[in-house]
Length: 322
Ligand code: F6P
Image 1 (tube, rainbow, N blue to C red):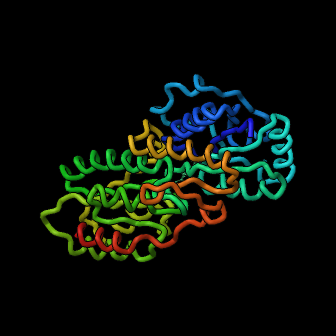
Image 2 (tube, rainbow, N blue to C red):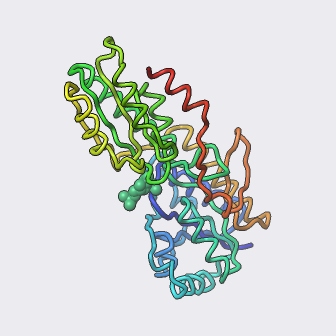
Image 3 (cartoon, rainbow, N blue to C red):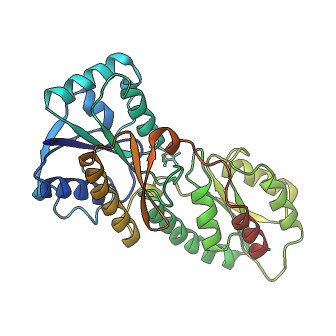
């Protein structure tokens, strides 16, 4: 192998730059040429290839976002688009690709492998943490720290006014941001798509809530089946007219910002191992870190989002928040 490429795709996440840096510098160490593809699969189709060297990735480890830009490509879903992508990879003499992204990225890589034999190795880049085969995806730790920083501030004002705050966090299909950050902020309730009776439980808990706890924080994942923070606030207002209820939607601040230490280290390890995996002949696998050890998971398995959350964590959350 003499030449590889790297790209980021899907929603950006803090730590992607640390991963890109590790890919490029590991490739340089092994005397491989390395190219970056801008705008994910769209750039693969539109021939947005750039040369990268050690210097091109200097001083990016601390930056959020992705220097390679990103996109969710509609064209790559067509066979014609994928054929253009294949031609471009061949034109540039690319013999291996590191794809940084989430389930959409790896689903794309699986479909692409039907027409193109150039090996792809993935690094899990998404704030949602909804991939099988790694304890933490790149971006998750920073995102949950952003959430707890914001909610701690909301708690100050909620406590001063004796208010109930419904805080919506990201997670279109997964409640992992809500669950972990909810535990970390001592939320009085967490609503996630993986559990179906959380609203009833929260209403019960609010009905017998202790008088000495004047503020209440309910964390709602955007993908929760009850329809988001505004809908939940309507239900609570109707049931408890005496409560002073407010809504806060944290939105895309969760996707930005400087990555945490853990994020930078994990992302660096994953980028480094992805290049080593390509050199070792691996393909169609995602690099992950499980119990501190590097593991490789086939793309097909990695994209099977875990439906079951740790029941012990859910139970603990209920006991601690009541
Ligand atoms: O994939 C990560 C994610 O942050 C989801 O949690 C969220 O629903 C989605 O991206 C929002 O993406 P965008 O606004 O970029 O379309």
